[in-house]
Length: 131
Image (cartoon, rainbow, N blue to C red; front, side, top):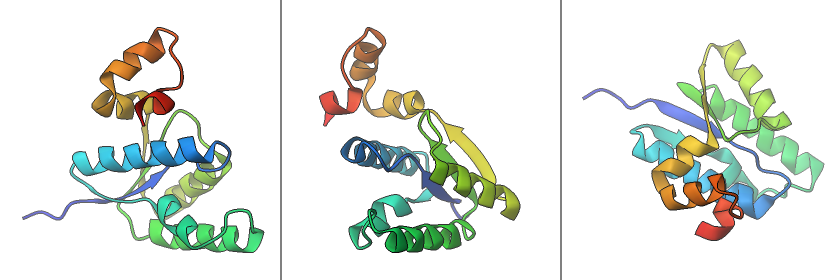
């Protein structure tokens, strides 16, 4: 049996933290459903490292890049590319790792088809309505 590709997931984290974490979980579920072995360090490392402490954030980013270099692909999930995601994209390109862009709408369509329609019709935030 062929090995499944290991995919590093990147999506925005800082800012609207609760919403961004909810979206990252949806992206993780999307990747699992897509048949890959996903890793989402931005859902893992903040469990033990404090994002607001510069030293710990830098350590988390360093660990993430080390993990990224062991992956087959990088998926940039969502409609915006944060500065951290851009740094990960640059690292992936330097290492010859395939980079894919997965839009928020592509992820939402799999799990939230009714809410997507609401959003397109001017409804409130999809994640707030769905979770």
